[in-house]
Length: 194
Image 1 (spheres, rainbow, N blue to C red):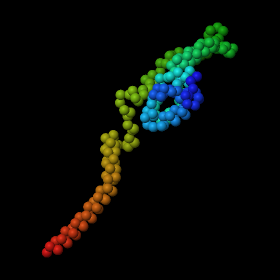
Image 2: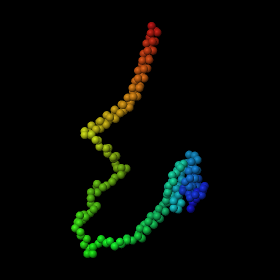
Image 3: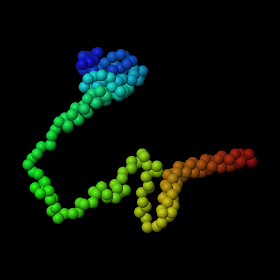
């Protein structure tokens, strides 16, 4: 079992740049020192055998994560498959088979293939694979679609006008004040020249 080279706890990652196996706490202390060491790429160690896994991470503080190497994952899958193949079905004494093999209870509704339903209705296509974006939500107005688009555009334009109306009115009032001051100063200048 690999131990952290700083504190002796079980190691969780290996930093190639530092050539050190570290636990989560010591990794944070070391790699929070500055932005350069925070960029060190670290490989997570297998939770089972502590060999290096293909999972890599970088940054000042990594979130504790459980990772498993390819070998341990394959062994786990094999052991699960072996355990499932060793399990034999248990006979609970409730046989549904009739003695004479005639299992007819008058219900002939399942003579058809159960998978023969409309499979087109049950198909799922993820959005990422779809060639076109999802359709827009349906309009709730009673008018036709063209009028709905025009009204939404008009509302959008009104919003823009309303948002800018305050700015425009402020600008216009400032301009009027300046014009008034200019007229006053211009008329005073004309009087003094006469």
